[in-house]
Image 1 (cartoon, helix red, strand yellow):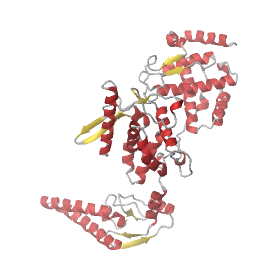
Image 2 (image 1 turned 60 degrees about the vertical axis):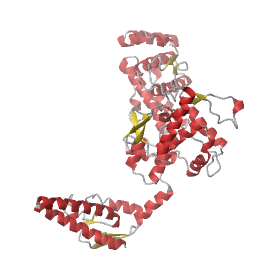
Image 3 (image 1 turned 180 degrees about the horizontal axis):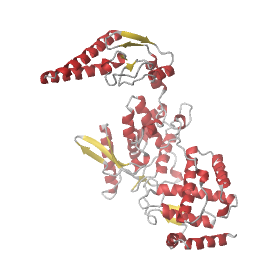
Length: 494
């Protein structure tokens, strides 16, 4: 059947569907370029600057029409434009493959076509998580076509194709220490607005989109503390971050003055773009910043970073010019904070990751930090029981064995270790470890033991004053056991 006849047949079938008939009356179907904001009411993030969806390259004609109908159904007012654009681009790639295979009829689309497309994507060297976005786009598209009654293509092939994939640490780019130091040394060469951008990125771990879209009045002050207000890029919610470094407040205020001096009261963003320059200006003048009252694009920001690297000859240890991407700063903030001993929950809160699992894939522990942890894990330990007696001296043979050993106890305690044999009857003193002969501590636990002793002493004063004799007896026993442990461990550590 010819392309024209296929198109006519599809239009006839769609006209029998009430919902599809209403969509067919939409004047946008007559255009091949749609404006994401004006035509579809999508949310356009300033730094993305993707303003249109182009259907020109999508063929055959019936696939082009269905893609347009799918876009009308898929695009919800206020939805990020990037989400819709990415999906249509995936469908565009599939349409090109259909043309290459001379597949002009929807009846020819089956599992073999999907398998061919999968192989085609793999030959492109794409990562598995990227390939899965193609699966998702095609599955959503054909499932919608079937549910709306436009076209019936079996999507069973996609079952089991979706799985959680996280990048390995060695696949994630971090800024090496030598590059980080070169950025510090040469930062003054950048135009001042770019200097301030980098200072905010590397201190707060912002996503580039969050930085570029900061509003002019992003600073907040409450109870003597300063906060920066932003819109979280991934989920589109407003959030606030505590500014722990006072100098950052001064940096933001300097940028506010810069904006007001250039654009007055009309421009409402903290940062702006720079006008483009001609080829003749590259070289020594490549870092000239000509303020323009609009949000800088992500592409432009990355170009600034790499012009900076080239001009200042910022290199790796092997002598290669470092290629910057904005997200490297965020990953490096996570890694540097972790290696400095910052609690992971604090880092997770700062970076606004929804789960600790996501944070794990941002952090690469440096050799020095790992070496210190291994050394601590392998040191000899003397274990003291609640009577203050040394009951065991243990020297791990290797770190793996030690980690396994620590997970083999019948009961997990807040600190210290339970040395009760798993062959014995179930523990009868759960949550009362201080009174158990099997509970052992080492000198690592001294700070916790001393804190608990102070708390028990305070509680004893209260129960004595209230005349609570039974509670007093129990607390006195706890105090004596804690003192036994503390006295013995202080002798062991001397």
